[in-house]
Image 1 (cartoon, helix red, strand yellow):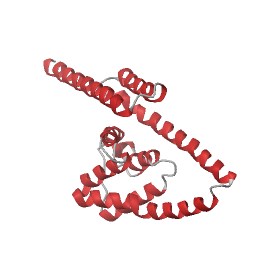
Image 2: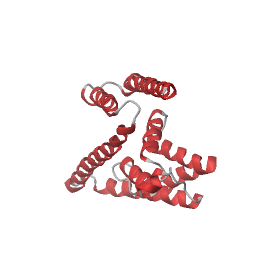
Image 3: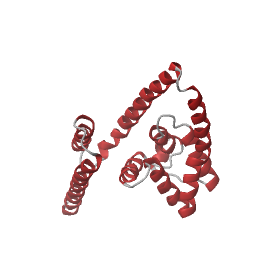
Image 4: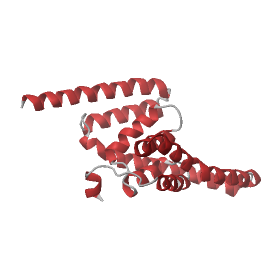
Length: 199
C-alpha cells in the first residue's frame, strides 16, 4: 500500500465505481462520515494521499455547506469534471436518505423507550471516539508540514482551546487562526526556496 500511495493518488475508474463507493461510504457513516471517509479514501481506495486528504479537507471546511459533501465534490470533479461532482453527491445522498427516512420513522415510534435513548447516547460517545482517533492519525502528516511538527501542533492545540474551552465563535477563530497558519506556511515555504536557491 505504501508504494502505491508514494506514487500519488489514484482515481475512480468509472462513474459507477465512484457512485457506489460514495454510497457505501455514506452508509457506514453512523455518527459521522469523517472517520469513515478518511479510511475509505486514503487507506482502502487510495484516491487521496494522507497529505492531500488533509489539505482538501481543510478547504472543504472553509467552504459553505457540509464538509464531507464539499470534499467529495472536489474528488468527483477532479476525476470526471462536473458529472463526477454530481455523481459523488448522488452517491452520498440517494440510498442514505432512504435509510434515514426509515430510521426516522422507527425512532418516532419508539423514541420514548429508555433503551432507545440509551442507544443514541452510546452512539454519540462512539462518534466522538472515532473523530478523535482519526484526528490523531491525520496529525502524523505534521511531520512533513512546512511549519514543522511543533508549530503545526501548536496551531492545532490553540484552535482547539479557543473553540472547546473558551467557546469562541467558529468564524472569528477560523479567520484568525486560519489566516495566521496560511501566512506562516507561505513564509516558511518562501524561506525554504530561498535556502535551496542559495545553496
